[in-house]
Length: 169
Image 1 (cartoon, rainbow, N blue to C red):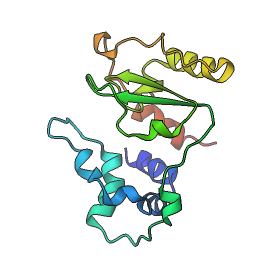
Image 2: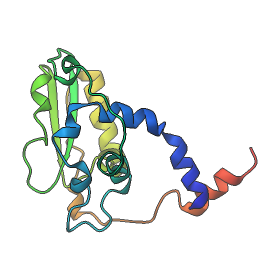
Image 3: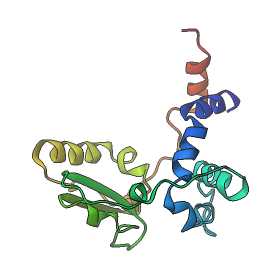
Image 4: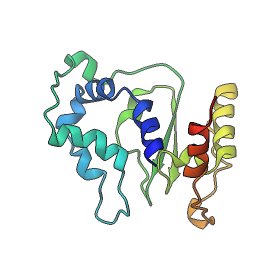
């Protein structure tokens, strides 16, 4: 795990990511750190808490973007919006969809944002392929994840990752 930490830290330019995130309007309207740790959560969302915790508990210098860059604008670009929603939510968590004149919205129940492609990769590939080749948002191959057996074995395992990282190249 110690060797893997170095890999995670190197995935991002943390200062750049924080500066770009914290200059938006969202930082004044929501307590993201609290949202990432709901009372019934087993582990919360450690990576998200790390990012938003720096803002809440630190003194990160931030200068808001000019209002023109913080105000959503409509676009004519054909866009596929895929929302992973909890329980019986029927609407996306934000009102962003209205800015996409030619947007198609797919809501996938009881999934997190990482689940959309990782739990059912064939369904995700089908959805993406049909959208990019035909302009059709077809989520018909997705199945309810609450009715499927779940395998919580990590792939690759920490041992496999360690072997990859520590092996001579």
